[in-house]
Amino acid sequence: MQKDAYTLIVEAIEAGAYKPGDRLVESELAERFGVSRTPVREALQRLETQSMLTRDGRSLIVATLDHNQLAELYAVRTELEGLAARLAARHATDEEVRVLESMVRDDMALLGGDPSALSRANRRFHKQIHLASHNRYLVQQLDLVHRSMALMAQTSFAAEGRDEVALAEHEAIVRAIAAHDGEAASQALRTHISRAFETRLRVEAGELKLR
Image 1: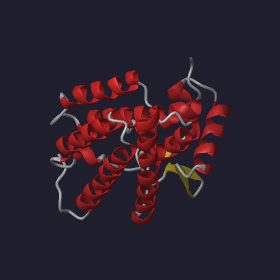
Image 2: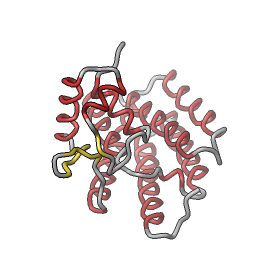
Image 3: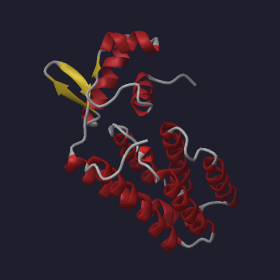
Protein backbone atom coordinates (compact mmCIF):
# COMPACT_ATOMS: atom_id res chain seq x y z
CA MET A 1 0.00 0.00 0.00
CA GLN A 2 1.39 3.38 -1.01
CA LYS A 3 2.09 5.72 1.89
CA ASP A 4 0.57 9.18 1.92
CA ALA A 5 2.55 12.41 2.23
CA TYR A 6 1.74 12.77 5.93
CA THR A 7 3.10 9.31 6.77
CA LEU A 8 6.21 9.84 4.66
CA ILE A 9 7.04 13.12 6.41
CA VAL A 10 6.38 11.71 9.89
CA GLU A 11 8.59 8.69 9.18
CA ALA A 12 11.35 10.98 7.91
CA ILE A 13 11.21 12.98 11.15
CA GLU A 14 11.19 9.79 13.24
CA ALA A 15 14.20 8.48 11.30
CA GLY A 16 16.10 11.68 11.99
CA ALA A 17 16.18 12.83 8.37
CA TYR A 18 14.63 16.06 9.63
CA LYS A 19 15.68 17.16 13.11
CA PRO A 20 14.25 19.78 15.47
CA GLY A 21 14.88 23.20 13.97
CA ASP A 22 15.13 21.95 10.37
CA ARG A 23 13.07 23.86 7.80
CA LEU A 24 10.56 21.89 5.72
CA VAL A 25 10.02 23.20 2.21
CA GLU A 26 6.90 22.10 0.34
CA SER A 27 8.54 21.84 -3.07
CA GLU A 28 11.57 19.93 -1.76
CA LEU A 29 9.37 17.44 0.10
CA ALA A 30 7.21 16.87 -2.98
CA GLU A 31 10.31 16.14 -5.05
CA ARG A 32 11.89 13.93 -2.40
CA PHE A 33 8.83 11.72 -1.97
CA GLY A 34 7.63 11.83 -5.57
CA VAL A 35 4.22 13.30 -4.78
CA SER A 36 2.40 16.47 -5.80
CA ARG A 37 2.60 19.61 -3.68
CA THR A 38 -1.07 19.61 -2.67
CA PRO A 39 -0.93 16.53 -0.38
CA VAL A 40 2.39 17.78 1.01
CA ARG A 41 0.79 21.14 1.84
CA GLU A 42 -2.11 19.39 3.56
CA ALA A 43 0.30 17.15 5.50
CA LEU A 44 2.32 20.13 6.68
CA GLN A 45 -0.83 21.89 7.86
CA ARG A 46 -1.87 18.76 9.75
CA LEU A 47 1.55 18.45 11.38
CA GLU A 48 1.46 22.09 12.40
CA THR A 49 -1.95 21.52 14.02
CA GLN A 50 -0.46 18.57 15.93
CA SER A 51 2.46 20.80 17.09
CA MET A 52 4.98 18.65 15.25
CA LEU A 53 5.89 21.73 13.21
CA THR A 54 6.07 25.36 14.22
CA ARG A 55 6.31 28.70 12.42
CA ASP A 56 9.55 30.59 12.03
CA GLY A 57 8.42 33.66 10.14
CA ARG A 58 6.86 32.31 6.97
CA SER A 59 8.71 29.00 7.21
CA LEU A 60 7.68 25.77 8.89
CA ILE A 61 10.33 24.06 10.99
CA VAL A 62 10.40 20.83 12.98
CA ALA A 63 9.38 21.76 16.52
CA THR A 64 11.74 21.62 19.49
CA LEU A 65 10.52 20.53 22.91
CA ASP A 66 11.47 22.74 25.84
CA HIS A 67 11.98 21.36 29.36
CA ASN A 68 8.34 21.83 30.42
CA GLN A 69 6.99 20.24 27.25
CA LEU A 70 9.34 17.31 27.74
CA ALA A 71 8.12 16.80 31.31
CA GLU A 72 4.49 17.02 30.20
CA LEU A 73 5.06 14.50 27.41
CA TYR A 74 6.71 12.00 29.74
CA ALA A 75 3.94 12.43 32.32
CA VAL A 76 1.29 11.53 29.75
CA ARG A 77 3.39 8.74 28.29
CA THR A 78 3.94 7.17 31.72
CA GLU A 79 0.21 6.97 32.41
CA LEU A 80 -0.78 5.69 28.96
CA GLU A 81 2.05 3.17 28.70
CA GLY A 82 1.27 1.88 32.18
CA LEU A 83 -2.35 1.35 31.16
CA ALA A 84 -1.27 -0.41 27.96
CA ALA A 85 0.90 -2.84 29.96
CA ARG A 86 -1.91 -3.50 32.40
CA LEU A 87 -4.34 -4.28 29.58
CA ALA A 88 -1.74 -6.36 27.73
CA ALA A 89 -1.32 -8.53 30.81
CA ARG A 90 -5.06 -9.09 30.71
CA HIS A 91 -5.66 -9.48 26.97
CA ALA A 92 -2.41 -10.51 25.22
CA THR A 93 -2.59 -13.80 23.40
CA ASP A 94 0.07 -16.48 23.84
CA GLU A 95 1.34 -15.60 20.37
CA GLU A 96 1.70 -11.92 21.27
CA VAL A 97 3.62 -12.79 24.43
CA ARG A 98 6.00 -14.99 22.43
CA VAL A 99 6.59 -12.13 19.98
CA LEU A 100 7.48 -9.81 22.88
CA GLU A 101 9.85 -12.42 24.31
CA SER A 102 11.46 -12.86 20.89
CA MET A 103 11.91 -9.09 20.53
CA VAL A 104 13.79 -8.92 23.85
CA ARG A 105 16.08 -11.78 22.82
CA ASP A 106 16.78 -10.24 19.42
CA ASP A 107 17.44 -6.81 20.89
CA MET A 108 20.13 -8.23 23.18
CA ALA A 109 22.29 -8.61 20.04
CA LEU A 110 22.14 -4.82 19.60
CA LEU A 111 23.73 -4.02 22.99
CA GLY A 112 26.64 -1.63 22.64
CA GLY A 113 25.77 -0.95 19.03
CA ASP A 114 24.15 1.89 17.13
CA PRO A 115 21.86 3.88 19.47
CA SER A 116 19.53 4.61 16.52
CA ALA A 117 19.04 0.88 15.89
CA LEU A 118 18.27 0.34 19.56
CA SER A 119 15.82 3.25 19.47
CA ARG A 120 14.00 1.72 16.48
CA ALA A 121 13.88 -1.66 18.24
CA ASN A 122 12.53 0.08 21.34
CA ARG A 123 9.72 1.69 19.33
CA ARG A 124 8.79 -1.70 17.86
CA PHE A 125 8.73 -3.25 21.33
CA HIS A 126 6.48 -0.56 22.78
CA LYS A 127 4.20 -0.66 19.74
CA GLN A 128 3.74 -4.40 20.23
CA ILE A 129 2.66 -3.81 23.83
CA HIS A 130 0.22 -1.14 22.65
CA LEU A 131 -1.32 -3.60 20.17
CA ALA A 132 -1.43 -6.34 22.81
CA SER A 133 -3.62 -4.07 24.95
CA HIS A 134 -6.41 -4.69 22.40
CA ASN A 135 -7.76 -1.18 22.91
CA ARG A 136 -7.85 0.81 19.67
CA TYR A 137 -8.45 4.16 21.37
CA LEU A 138 -5.45 3.73 23.62
CA VAL A 139 -3.32 2.74 20.63
CA GLN A 140 -4.37 5.91 18.80
CA GLN A 141 -3.41 8.12 21.74
CA LEU A 142 -0.07 6.37 22.18
CA ASP A 143 0.66 6.81 18.46
CA LEU A 144 0.32 10.57 18.94
CA VAL A 145 2.57 10.52 22.00
CA HIS A 146 5.27 8.48 20.27
CA ARG A 147 5.10 10.76 17.24
CA SER A 148 5.94 13.67 19.52
CA MET A 149 8.87 11.67 20.93
CA ALA A 150 10.50 12.09 17.51
CA LEU A 151 10.96 15.78 18.37
CA MET A 152 13.73 14.86 20.78
CA ALA A 153 17.07 15.47 19.16
CA GLN A 154 18.77 12.49 20.82
CA THR A 155 17.60 9.05 21.93
CA SER A 156 18.18 8.14 25.58
CA PHE A 157 19.83 4.95 24.26
CA ALA A 158 22.82 7.12 23.32
CA ALA A 159 23.58 7.60 27.04
CA GLU A 160 26.35 5.38 28.38
CA GLY A 161 24.97 2.22 29.99
CA ARG A 162 21.32 2.95 29.22
CA ASP A 163 20.90 0.21 26.61
CA GLU A 164 21.70 -2.70 28.95
CA VAL A 165 19.52 -1.34 31.74
CA ALA A 166 16.63 -0.62 29.37
CA LEU A 167 16.62 -4.14 27.95
CA ALA A 168 16.62 -5.59 31.48
CA GLU A 169 13.57 -3.41 32.12
CA HIS A 170 11.97 -4.78 28.93
CA GLU A 171 12.51 -8.31 30.24
CA ALA A 172 10.74 -7.45 33.50
CA ILE A 173 7.79 -5.96 31.61
CA VAL A 174 7.38 -9.05 29.43
CA ARG A 175 7.64 -11.40 32.41
CA ALA A 176 4.79 -9.59 34.13
CA ILE A 177 2.66 -9.60 30.98
CA ALA A 178 3.33 -13.32 30.47
CA ALA A 179 2.29 -13.94 34.09
CA HIS A 180 -0.93 -11.96 33.48
CA ASP A 181 0.02 -9.70 36.39
CA GLY A 182 -1.46 -6.36 35.37
CA GLU A 183 -0.24 -4.44 38.39
CA ALA A 184 3.33 -5.66 38.02
CA ALA A 185 3.31 -5.04 34.26
CA SER A 186 2.03 -1.50 34.73
CA GLN A 187 4.56 -0.72 37.44
CA ALA A 188 7.45 -2.21 35.45
CA LEU A 189 6.60 -0.12 32.40
CA ARG A 190 6.05 3.05 34.42
CA THR A 191 9.45 2.52 36.04
CA HIS A 192 11.00 2.00 32.60
CA ILE A 193 9.61 5.33 31.32
CA SER A 194 10.61 7.15 34.51
CA ARG A 195 14.19 5.96 34.23
CA ALA A 196 14.32 6.92 30.55
CA PHE A 197 13.18 10.44 31.49
CA GLU A 198 15.72 10.61 34.30
CA THR A 199 18.46 9.52 31.88
CA ARG A 200 17.49 12.24 29.43
CA LEU A 201 17.54 14.87 32.18
CA ARG A 202 20.96 13.72 33.37
CA VAL A 203 22.30 13.95 29.84
CA GLU A 204 20.97 17.49 29.53
CA ALA A 205 22.53 18.38 32.88
CA GLY A 206 25.90 17.00 31.75
CA GLU A 207 25.92 14.17 34.30
CA LEU A 208 25.90 11.45 31.65
CA LYS A 209 27.93 11.23 28.47
CA LEU A 210 26.60 10.22 25.06
CA ARG A 211 28.12 7.38 23.09
